[in-house]
Image (cartoon, rainbow, N blue to C red; front, side):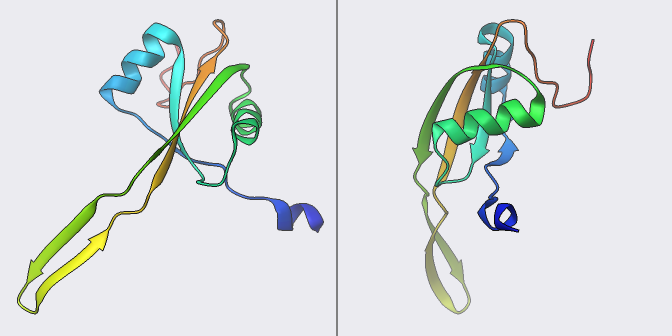
Length: 104
């Protein structure tokens, strides 16, 4: 029961962009959107457990949310997008992660 209370979602989703795909092919680095309060050790353990790979390095960055304005008939509304934390995970040179299920 105590384990269920302490469990939290660390990896939210993989970030698949053209830049990240080039990093995967050339430097064996994968990008993930992670929980904002997760640290590098938790991210490393979560990736190793979920994908069964060996993690060499983890780099994190927090991307600030943008200010947004919406014009409607009722007037102008201001808001912000949420801040997001991104993790760049470097894997051992023999390991790969297949997100799309196209294993060779």
